[in-house]
Image (cartoon, rainbow, N blue to C red; front, top):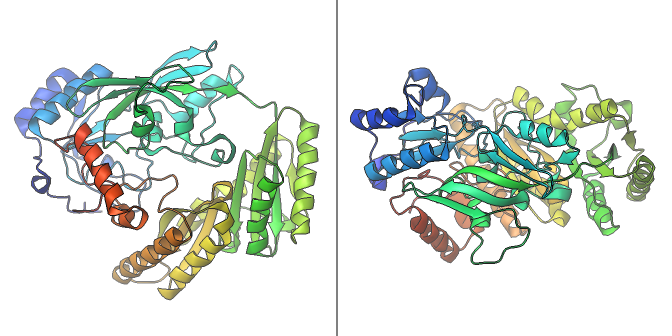
Length: 478
């Protein structure tokens, strides 16, 4: 596919690097530390966001924070755009080099530097694959809970930049809730360390919290110190079927009100159920159901979890739900989780789609699904919804179907804007975990007042006065 035209860097006060500049980069990164071949440029011009592609001028592959610092100092002096990148698994275009320039890949910074059992922390570099980190701490009976769906390929730096979440955020929170300290480099090459291993620290502004979720626009994160907890001794997975969407949504609110704290609470509405049924054989008990809640419980004792599962089934039945499917053994749990984990793949196989990452207060889940369906229907589209009900965060997939491409793009954008207006009116936000990035930036004024956006822009200028870090992201065009 032909690359889309990038932003004009000169309009941003930037320039694209020239051959002598790239030669200087290669001097300290080494011959394998800077790539300009067509295959590498194409691969690093994409992420998992639809079919977008913006070609960079080069890919820098530093091996240390010192090399990141020298790279940024050179880019800052030349006013070259720089786009930090992990594994390219993002879904909002956050790692796309929309103004060309240098893609700064952290892939080779992949060491787990320290596992501190006395303080229950792990310090790892930005290029560590999340699943590798989780397996390492699991060997010691510990858990690092954040679990985005791409954990087998995504890298820690990207998780930190996007403040990634996933199903377990229902109980354990997002990536940012587990970060104690960061090793970063500012836009001009200045190293900056924030936080540390302390569990409490109110000495000045919370720079760690500010940088997590800043989408690579304020600094480049090169390493992080993370909190760990003991791995639960027991887990149990169940699916609660419902004949009505409102009943499933009511059950989500009711189970928390009743004092339950599930590790995960995932919703599939009927469009998602129909889609995944084409890939995964569904148990007979789920046939004809309009909504499903997949709930994961964890704790210390199997019997206690069985008692809690029985209580949840009784609660669901009181709202019109059907008989629960309960899985205790790991293989059985994986089979139930497959019903949820395969939905995205099933939707993608069925149609070209645009995924909106909407979040509302939990009590407004049913209204969110209805708003998505209505916005899609008004444009002749279909909407399929599923995701993290425990957080009020659903993935709304708008499907192209048989529409011609030009008409699809027009109607998709109209439906998406209508959806986000409805979401904000419900007290929600335009993104819960994927970030604003490139694809959602035009909707930022729906979520934030002009004064808030102006303050964010001022923070950006303070950290990055030349505007070289991930230009074109988060903020709408002035």
